[in-house]
Amino acid sequence: MERLTGLRTRGPARVATLAAPGSLLDVGLVLTHACNLACAYCYTGEKKRVRMLETVAMQATELAIATARAAQAKLQLTFFGGEPLLEAELLLGIAARARSLADGVPLVMQVTTNGTLLDAALVEQLGALGVHLAISIDGTRAQHEAARPLAGGGSSWETTRHGLALLLATRDRFSFDVVTVVDPGTVHMLGDGARELFDLGVDAITLNANFGGVWGEPELAVLEQQLEVVAALVVAWLRRGRWVRVQPLESALRSFAETGRVVTSSCGAGSRRIAIAPSGRIYGCCRAVGEDDGKGALGHLDDGFPEPRASGAGCACANAEETGNPRLAGAAQLRHDRAVERVSLRLATLLSAEYELLHIVERGPRP
Ligand code: SF4
Image 1: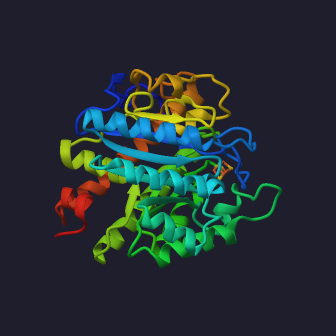
Image 2: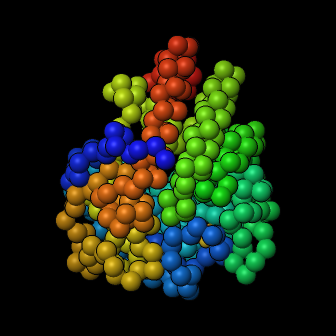
């Protein structure tokens, strides 16, 4: 294995204000611990029929808006689970309440869903309230079925793809993106999955690495090869006049365009990002809620939002999974980041010769 000494290290821990003027306050609401899927890599803890009460949800929403307003910050409300669309009525009620209360506070809302419970009416309702959808699909059928079965067994492929079809049918009116989990067991299919999704009409994919999986040197090498395949797809589509967005490559390209180098940003957990569990406990992010056993909790909604904490670079939860320390990245993450950096730099060099790079990542291709 390549020695880790000499690898680019992550930045120091930072404290951002929870909501500073012009900044983004990200408040996640974990609407339920239940889910209709049983993904192999799920990090949200035991699936149980515990939902957020409407009173808790409204209290959190009102506090989030008041905090953002007082600080002249933008607000992002993120709906999470379990599967948040098991609580679709609650979600729609919160979203409508947030829209009516925001009144001058810039508000973005997003739901991360497995897509299996979507129907045409729900897509319209979410879209009308301006709730952006992030639908989890692991690329091809083989990739998806390797890790995302229905709870109780069976494939979730058909219902997930039905949900995607509904989003594709309304994409001219409502934006959405696809979240693909990059697992060591299926990383060799990453390029095939991205190709299939782009061919279907998906314009934005977020690649979320499962750092809880077992990443050895062979899998990390394949990861870099597959990121190269994805980067080549981006270039191929760009040359045909279509900018397909891939995270984390796009953030790396933006960083390169703005600063001349690729910098890993902080997840902001506990500083500009918090999440509220059904119990009302507050955590650094939705992923940190887990089974909501209180471990790592930053406070409780009844006591208001907590004082911001220092957050390290990268994902605090992934850090904790690998090293036991939320501020310390492990070897797999550092190798992943280095692969992203190398692929992004090659991509940036290629694109810079043909396009205005910053213009591409902000608005689309322009030679
Ligand atoms: S859909 Fe999400 S919450 Fe449900 S099992 Fe899969 S990863 Fe976990």
